Picture 1 (cartoon, rainbow, N blue to C red):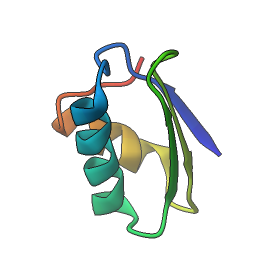
Picture 2 (cartoon, rainbow, N blue to C red):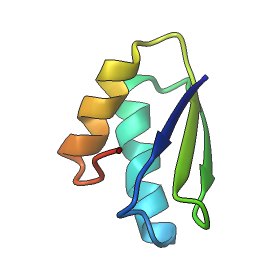
Picture 3 (cartoon, one colour):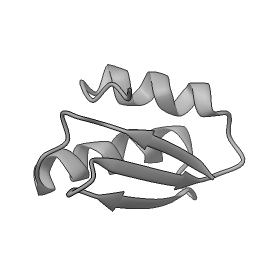
Picture 4 (tube, rainbow, N blue to C red):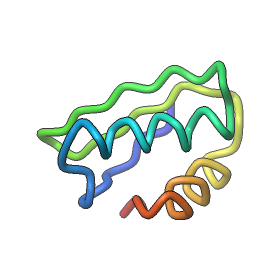
Length: 63
């Protein structure tokens, strides 16, 4: 499992954009988003770097 903290994620719209960014890397990935803790957990066999880049490109860079 890959886990990111995304400080700029604050609402459902943000979560939707993050889900879209993750799906562009791996459409079969399982994504768990916790808005309160600004945490995104991704279950995928793809490399963490790909998700980090996709989230940054979507304007939600992980810490």
